[in-house]
Length: 294
Image 1 (tube, rainbow, N blue to C red):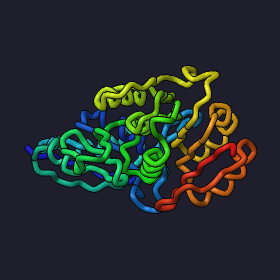
Image 2: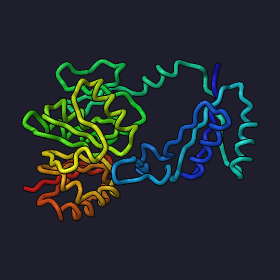
Image 3: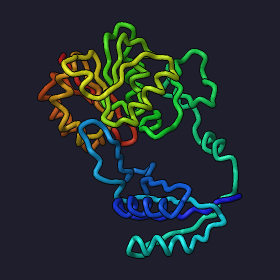
Image 4: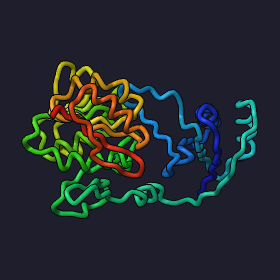
């Protein structure tokens, strides 16, 4: 049996409302993504400590899936009546296939550098000598493919080792940065987030990778100082969190999730707390900042 999918390009509020409407109309799934994903216009939205996402993408891409024996016209008419206005859509027929295998085929191992690979559980590691993090794509942000995560992983692989006393992953998402820090030898590693789903994913991924990491809400690190703090979040929360992040940092603070057009402003803010703030890396319009006291 095949499937039918409705493809609807709408604004943030409409995407949220329509996805709920179609799920109430017995859709198999309703998925919302950024219309501009993978382009310079991509709008990053991550729910991280200190930043509450108010909605979906301004230009959202809604895909609604039904069985192919569904009266799709009736579903659209019903949704239109509930929604209160008409909307543009396209209909696509999808052949029945092995969806698990199809999804898995879209995710290959990610090479960060010669020292580190991120490998889905259904793949073998491409290298017998590099450090490997086993990580499957999931609901929590952070698989290593996005430039912000990629640059953090690269930094960790070159700067964290057995001599590193402790590391904090601030806004841990999938836990990938904390896991990398532990695998490269950090003695103690903690990860914090405000999203229960992210913490659940982080704990699961740490278990899969056989590393011991303390994950929890922000209060688990109250009063502590860390030799390395990595915050892969967005510029808005980074503006607000500067005093808190500086208070947690005893050595170096690594900031990611910053567009190159925002770097000068963020450098100016963090120079109020650190003696040295430099651009440590750039990638596809994103910037990695490194802050230190010396």
